[in-house]
Image 1 (tube, rainbow, N blue to C red):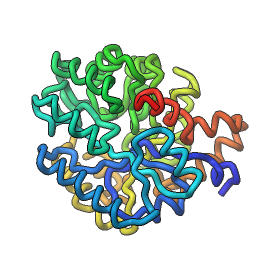
Image 2 (image 1 turned 90 degrees about the vertical axis):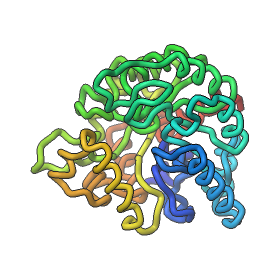
Image 3 (image 1 turned 180 degrees about the vertical axis):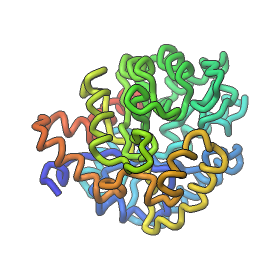
Image 4 (image 1 turned 135 degrees about the horizontal axis):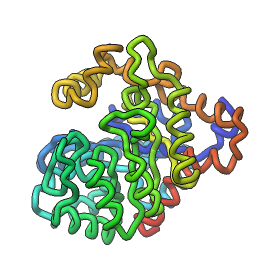
Length: 335
């Protein structure tokens, strides 16, 4: 592992599940992670149960985790070696049409929320909706409320038109915490150049991902690898600049990968349009969902080493690893 990677403040834009143990992240040098604290399709009660469970974990874990409420909390994690837990949701379906729930959520620690998860909800269309209907009137109200309350707006699984409209409606930076470029890999989950530009125009950040389906070139005989990741990173940097890229692995933070088999089964069965072709080529095992040479947090240092070999400036590497997200968080969270 390079010394730059070891010393860097590293923010992982999205981990979709965690087992409660920060060891995997700490050992990989991750400073803080946007961790999904409830099921993607959960109703309000189940979503609040997820938040409650993580608060109980924080109480039990001693110095392992630190709840992140401000950007300064992330910097504290970097100094003391704790792992920052940024509570995130991947779907605001749980608020239904009751916007007051956002006030409660912010006070319980939620700091990042995705407007939609693949499908349509009250706020707008997800990325798998063929109509691509855009942001609703209620969605516009939610964007304004999230800006006011300091909850980061995540557009990763959000439809293209909804993403652009949400970015244009926002007075704060918006994020795509884990998404790649659709013009490089035409996956439904990836972002159009228009959406990437709209996110960057807010001061936002696109978390480039090592998730295989978003990097894959469609060849069933060739498992995606870091060469493909670099194509996405290069394209986004060329399009909007190095100040608007981060790292968003979309990996699970678990010691035993077999514990997330129920989630890979759920995503394949519920959203086949996003994953079925990839699974047919490489299996539905979580180990095959990521790049052949970057399938764990421990292997993320390989990205840093590649960027160093390509003579990226150290400051730009640090921006990509966490600096850009940290800057956006400071603006969004008001401190």
